[in-house]
Amino acid sequence: MINQDSNIDRIFKEGLIGLEVTPPPDVWEAVHGRIQRKSRKIPLFYSVAAASVLLFILAGSAWLLFFSQPETADVAEMTPVQEEAIVPPSDIADETGQQEPVITLTEEPQTDMERQAVETSPLAALSETDRDAVARVEDTAKPIEQKESIGITQFQETQMPTRTEPVPGFIASRSDANLPITQPLTTLSPSGYEPSRDPAISLPVEMPPELLKEEIPKWSVGGQFSPIYSFRYIGQNNLDSYRDTYNSHENGMFTYTGGLHIQYNANRKIKIYTGVYYSRMGQQIDDIQLYKSANNGPINLPIKGNLDINNSIGSITSRNEILYFQDQSGYRVEPLSLSEWYDPLKEGLIPLNAEIIQSLDYLEVPFIIRYKLIDKRVDLNILGGLSTNFMVKNEAYANYQGSKIHIGETNGLKTINYSSTLGLGLEYDLTEKISLSLEPAFKYYINSINRSENMNTHPYSIGIFTGLSYIFK
Amino acid sequence: MFAVCLQYSGDYEEAKDVLQEGFIRVFLNLHQFQKIGSFEGWIRRIMINTALEKYRDKYHLNRVENQEENLEVGVDDEIFEDLSAQDLLRMIRKLSPKYRTVFNLYAIEGYSHKEISALLNISEGTSKSNLSRARAILQEKLKHYYKITKVI
Image (cartoon, rainbow over all chains, first blue to last red; front, side, top):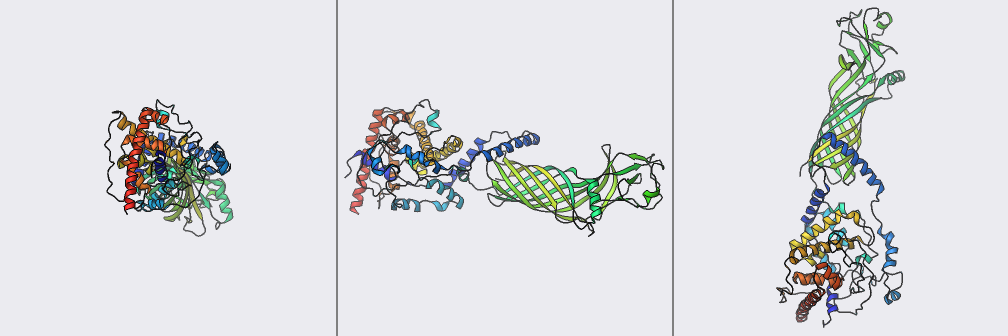
C-alpha cells in the first residue's frame, strides 16, 4: 500500500497543511515583554527636562512615522506580479491556464481533519482578544487547496520556481550565509503548500500590535505640570460697551498648573482619570496708572472706603492704603467722582510703572477620559472631560519691578465652577512601568464665574502638559 | 505557527520557546519584510530558522555520526479513528531530532539534500540516510496505523 518514499513525504506534507495548534497564552506575554525590553534603549532617568526634550523629538518622529507609512500593506495589489512570477515553466502551466497560479487547482471547503483541529484547539482558555489575535495568525496558515483524501493519489514532480523570500535572522547572520536558498526546489510537490505563492493571502502588515495584547494594567498614578496661558471670554449678557472696554484693556497671562492623578484603564483604548490639580488662572489689567505715597505711608484720600477696580472678572477692592489708581482710558476705577477733582501728582504721589494682575487659584478635580487613537511606540490620545474647580485663593496685585505689591481681592466670584477640557496627548513608555506624556490641552469654564447675572465671564487656559505616570503591573 | 514549531520540536516546552523566539524575531525584523510574497510564509521561514538554530545548538555540538537513535517504532497506545493532521504531527514529533529535522526540511519544506547539508552542517549522504531512515520509521507507523484502522 505504501511503498514509495515520495508518497510518505506527500502524506505528511499534505496531512499537515493547515494544521492549527493554539499556543499557550503565556508565549504572547513573554514575547510582549521581550519586545518591550529590546526596543527600549533609553536609560531610566536623566531628568524631567531632558526627558521632555526627548519627548519632543519622539513626538516629531512619531508624526513623521504616522504620515509617511501606510497603515497596512495591500498585498493584493502585488498579486499580479506574484502570479506572473510563480507560473512554472512546465506543462502544467499550460494545462491550468496562465492566469491561474498552479497551486489553486481546487477550492474545496475545509476537510474534516481541519475542522477537527480547529474544534479541539484549546481556544477556550484564551481571552477574546487573544483569540482574535491567534485567529488572525492562524487564518493565514489555511491553504487554499485542500487534499481530497489521505490516500495516495497521482503524483507528479515538477520544476518549481526559485525561492526569493527574504530570510532575516539566523541564515543571514551565519557564516554559512551563502545558503542555496535561491536554488530551484525540484523536490516540491506541485500541489504542495507554498504560502508565498498563495495569491489569496492578503495579510495586513500592521498585525503585530494586536498580537502584543496581554493583560492590560488597570491602574496608574502620576503627575503633570504645564505652563498655561490664561485669559477669559466675556459672554453676551454684558453691556457691549463694557465688553469692548474690557477686551481692549485686559490681557491674558502666563501661569502654571499641575497636579496628581490616578488613572484607570477601562480597556486598551479608554482611560479615565481623576485627581487633584492646582491651577492659577487670571488676567492682566492694563492702562490703570498706579501711584504710591512718597513715604510709603497711607494715602489720605478725601473719601471714605476703598477704591474699586472694575474689570471683566469682577471688581477688585483695594485694601492697600499706600496705592492710588487712576484709569487712563475710562471709568473703571470707583468712586468715579474722585478722579475728577483728585490729582495724585499734586498730592505728591509717585507714579509707578506697574501692571495689575488678577490671579485666581483653583483646586481642580478633573474627570477626564483619554481615548487612544494611535497605538504605537508613541501613543496618540485624545482627551476630554469635565472638572470641578474650587476657588482657593483670590488675589490682585501690582507687578512692580518684578515684585508683587498686594492690592486686594476680586469680589463677586463663585467658589465652585465647572470647566471642560479638550486635548491631544502623546504618550511614550520610558520603561514598563513609567510613561511620559505630553498633552496640549484646552480648558474652558462652562459656567460664568460671576455671581452677578450682569456679568458673564468664562476663564479659559491653554497649556502643554508634561507628565510622568507610574503603571501598576 | 505553533504547529510548525511543534513539528520541529519533540518537546512541547521547546516548541514554545521556538515560537516565542521566532515571534520576537518577526517583530524585531518587521522592517525587513519587503512585502513581496506572503507575510505568513515569511513568518514560517523565521520559525523554521529558529527551530533549526535550536536544533544545531542542542544536538550539533555533540554530533556523533550514525549514532543509533533511540527509536520508538513500537505500538502507539492510542487507537486512531482517523489519520488526522495531529496524528501525523505526533508521528513526526516522535522521530529522533536528526530524522525529524531532515524529514521536515526535505519532505515538508522542499529543501534539497544539498541545502539541508548546508543548513545542518552535515554531509549530503547523512542527510539522505537520515531521510530514508525517517521515511522507513514513518512508513512503519503508517502501516501500523492502517492495520489498526482495518481491524476497526
